[in-house]
Length: 289
Image (cartoon, rainbow, N blue to C red; front, side, top):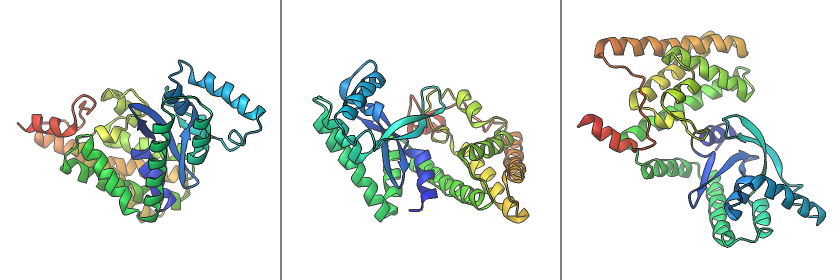
């Protein structure tokens, strides 16, 4: 699986891992998982201040000459305020060593969990189809219908085609990707992704907006991104500012189609629905009953 695709899959599904109900932030770095050390410490110690616990442990490990701290990297992960902040992270091997330094009855089950997560990552590199199958299984386990899952996964392919196009046309930083995505959303739905999340009552940084969209919302998101890709190719634009103008144009295509459908159907496409309380499959049944 190519790095760009890995980043896309990571952003959609895999920034949060769960161990016995506890969330652990993770990120792809150098084609492997890196985990938030503070989150792991919090899980193992139940400390009210895992950050302080890690700072003390880090000093002790330094004094002992351990390479664990040296091998940690500061990587950007979503913080509680929704912003990306540099966080001490370690790969699977590093986390194993840190776990060995923490007296906890959860250590052994956590190491087994960590080994499974790391092994699945290796499998996905060797056979990219496995990541798609696992993704489908995860959505099914969360209570999404097969119809919704198909739409969601088609949207991922459309999104990947767009981000590949942006990369080829000189869009470089994550901040630029976010701005262009926001331009498409504003033109398509009348609000940025962050505004959209607030409208749907999604207040956690880990809440993925697209995982709480209805089929129609996903379809018009796809239309805006597919139109942006097609226009960028047709006009052969290079650089951030030209692509920003194209993003508005592509979003406007979806926005025009959305308004036309709303006028003809008498129903709004943009919905305050989310799937936090009831899974998508149950919401679908209630709406069609």
